[in-house]
Image (cartoon, rainbow, N blue to C red; front, side, top):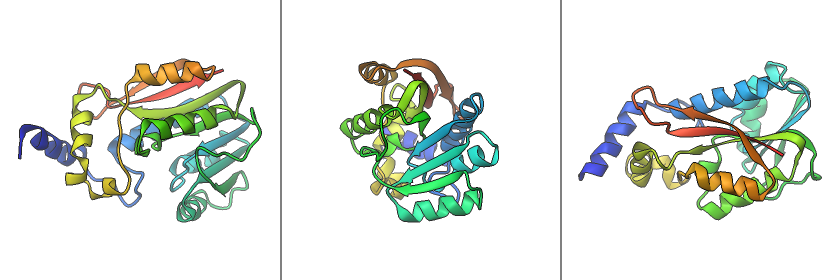
Length: 218
């Protein structure tokens, strides 16, 4: 095993397990917590989550009374079932099956659109761009697009993601990609958004931010 492979192996051991839900993990959980804090600062209105997964964020938002209506979209019907189970019988949650780049809503329909722990699993930049474009079109004037990226400038993330399939078999099905913040900021500008907040997310044993939670507004 070369030096990069050894570093990636050490990273996978140090970060800890992911738990029973695929979207859980030490970094993913910190990202989700930061997104919930941002959501809670502007309560009310309708929220759309693109890639609701097992409903971990939806549960916090709905049970915390952060939104009047929470619509969770996912391409996987099993995920939607799990999300409904996690949220429970709260009438504020509604799950829909669909693709993140083809969203069946009118433009400017939501005060906030969120996409957490999803974009880093897209196989290429073009897929990320398609989702950001589709999601951004649904945000009303003055509304927020809230999402995260894994930080490509973090040497630990870059190395670990390069060798991820060796140490994390789940990434053979769900690829992992990291991006530079500047590139993402330029993409947002092309769609009429400005970044109003960038929250660095850290592993407790590491000095570089391994991810950013970004809030962008029209």
